[in-house]
Image (cartoon, rainbow, N blue to C red):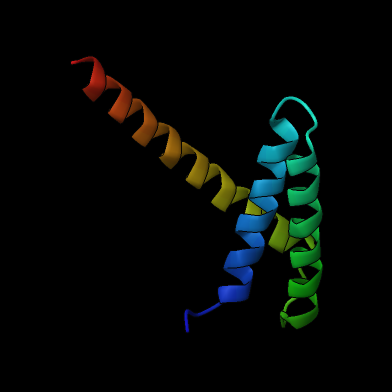
Length: 85
């Protein structure tokens, strides 16, 4: 099992919620997905050893989110450039 798996899932879940909040419109699918993600986050908070809602964790999540978003953007732009060539 991956080390800190719960924390990784928590980070990805919070990032997905942020992305859903940024998306336009309100559909049944989006509402249901957000509800399920919130339930996942709640359950993860119960089983993790570290509290998820503190300044250190928040900063860590923000840094990971920024790094991941930058990485995705780089890959998308690279692939876009390759398609245009």
